[in-house]
Length: 280
Image 1 (spheres, helix red, strand yellow):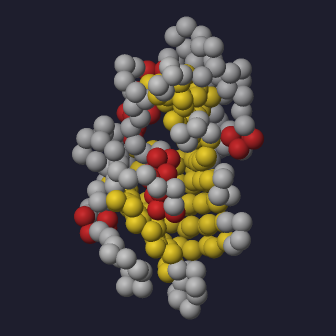
Image 2: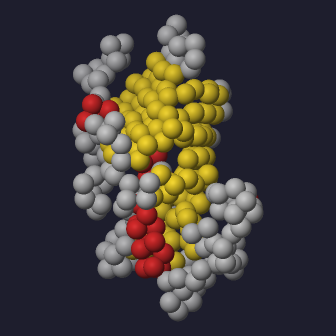
Image 3: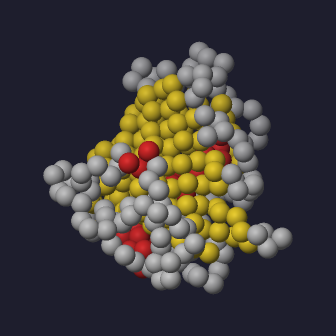
């Protein structure tokens, strides 16, 4: 149930408890008292910060773990937000390679589509997947859209009269507001598309969860180590989990530049690898 004008608060998950200890991202700074806001005011605070971020250029340490293997590589994370905040995000490049040149990894998206590349010389494990923008896919390329959805730098839908409607879920612990973005199904029932866990004391997003068409949670992303870059703050550590595939992706951003002149169209251009079959 929702308290009138306010979110009633959620029970803190174990993943979130680790983000709550002692400080708000600046060493030694105690947490402020928890604020009490209505749903619209929470969204306003999130969007006021995120609207100051037009693009991001960063070096990144990448750790990927699957049921069969794990890799640690270094590379770059580059993203560019659309000119209008209500347009879907498309421009992303997450790429890396290990120090010995044994494997190159790329996860990307632009206005044409989204792609996944794993180039492992001397191995039979090469993977290339490209999906035209607007088409649905459950393959590895779709993870580019997932990553775009949980980086925590995009404005959130704030219209109360348009899907996906922001609804504040009710719980009991005085730690978080959880904003669920829901859509109405043909039978009149509601289905969550995304949950955003907003820390009432640190006043930042600590967790984003995504749901599939059956309403099942399929991804969570814990955001941590917030830093200020110019006028805006953003998380520099992300722990992303795809539950069904049992894949985890850890990103540690460094040398971060917000609103950088380094970001241009060429960062998001895409060319099919020479070894990949097909027309694309």
